[in-house]
Amino acid sequence: MQNDEFLDGLHHVGRQAKWVTSVCTGSLLLGAAGLLQGYRAASYWYARDYLESFGAIPDSARIVIDRNRATGGGMTAGVDFGLHLAGLWAGESAGKLVELCMEYAPAPPYGCGRPELADEATLNTAKNILGGKMPKDVVIETAKRRGM
Amino acid sequence: MQNDEFLDGLHHVGRQAKWVTSVCTGSLLLGAAGLLQGYRAASYWYARDYLESFGAIPDSARIVIDRNRATGGGMTAGVDFGLHLAGLWAGESAGKLVELCMEYAPAPPYGCGRPELADEATLNTAKNILGGKMPKDVVIETAKRRGM
Image (cartoon, rainbow over all chains, first blue to last red; front, side, top):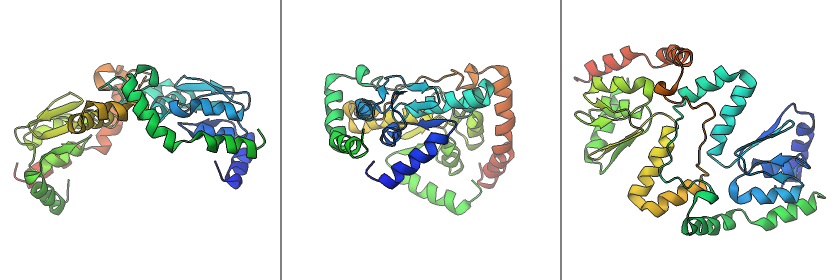
């Protein structure tokens, strides 16, 4: 996000791409590259609101497709995202085949993998850790530097 | 599985280990190393029955713990497995924290990630592909070579 040469390149490629996609906090890079202005987009739950700094509309869904911008939620949400796009692009039978070959029939042991599902203690601990790793000031500084 | 030096090393280490664990087809390696005789074990769905060649008892659960042998199901089933062990070893609050930080609240798009959930066409295609990649004769030859 702090590398303008990279963001310029991403902008250049993204403007001509058939599809512009990301999983997890990758949508912040698309945003910083000016590719999400006026688009709904997903991101990792902790960083989702950061998208607003880049003119995107944060969406809490795990898979968000707005015109040719396809963005996925955080980390393991990318599994659902990838399977969805495999089905969209290669046909549902291909998506189903990949899902079976991946043995993807999840059963999360704690059922707390999103902030709205987690208890307060777990959520507060996570926020404390993630706040240090994903500081908002970097996003604000980047948006300002990129003229957004 | 065809490298006896590796299997001997695995046997040596595994016999003294506090825990012996695997995900996906890793349980076949534990089996070939003689570490699962008489133990219930999980594996990738296509290869699960192969465990019998090594004297293990195939179990269709995604997480199988028999004494100090902890084995997980195929590929993405390893996510559940890892979280379960994180909770077992570091406490439930640690397991919950990891699950939230991973944004692990899955929603499989097709709901066919296990053979019993898949339609016949998807299952047959998967079996055709996997049969070529995981031939049973390698397992039978290994079990024979290792004296099981």
